[in-house]
Length: 344
Image (tube, rainbow, N blue to C red):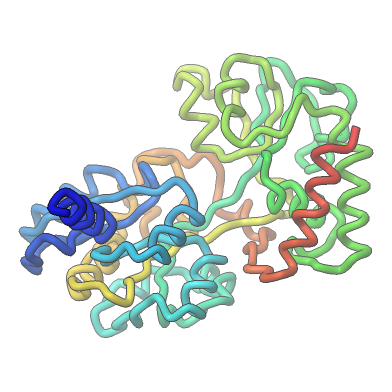
């Protein structure tokens, strides 16, 4: 019985992260994507405010959401993507943002708030970063190409290309190329996207790959990949970056907005607000952008403090559309994706 009681206590402590620790008011418990905030930014925040930041990481929105819904407590700050921000607002999982403490909100661009239709007034969320998957081309192998999603239909590069194993991204790109919304649930739109992918794009692909595309590109196995710039460049030695062209096609496509949100049961609300405000100082946000070679779309004033050249420019995301929570409509995409993935 004593063993069972001990095991139960330990399990509850692990689940709640900090429920078995005394809250000192000077420790921020931050639940964030892996490697998404530079150590230097965390360290500088700790030193300036005389506090400690405890980081716990997740690899997907689904993992984060499942852990919180399973009863994990003790986290103050979390960084969900737009569809999960929408879901979590509806679930009542956030505290409201105190705009009187968000003195740097003027640094957040109107363009990003126009795309954040799920919370345009930042009532529960403050944009952290907006990004999009694009296309990376090995220019040492490919000299002439269309800067469009139509590149995947070019037989010249047959079996030298891959696209993400991600239904919202691939189907979204096809919809955007066809001039439709990346969130369309229209049966005819989806049928046209399916036809394009199966008959024109897929025959030229080695595979759909969401994990190893960066390594395969760096090894020269793939000459053209759909994916995220930071993943591709991280795998290629910097002295060879001149051989890479990364672009987001002019047709646009799906994009994401990750946001800083304070959880309903946060014990360190003021400290969480302090961090949100801190990260949006232009000189601080510039460090974040430089670390990943991101463009200054969210906080445009950070541009004057940046020291590194972004892998792509913010204006390339102008035609991108935020992936919305489709609710039960997601089943249509899942059914379509199964046909795409397994049709020979």
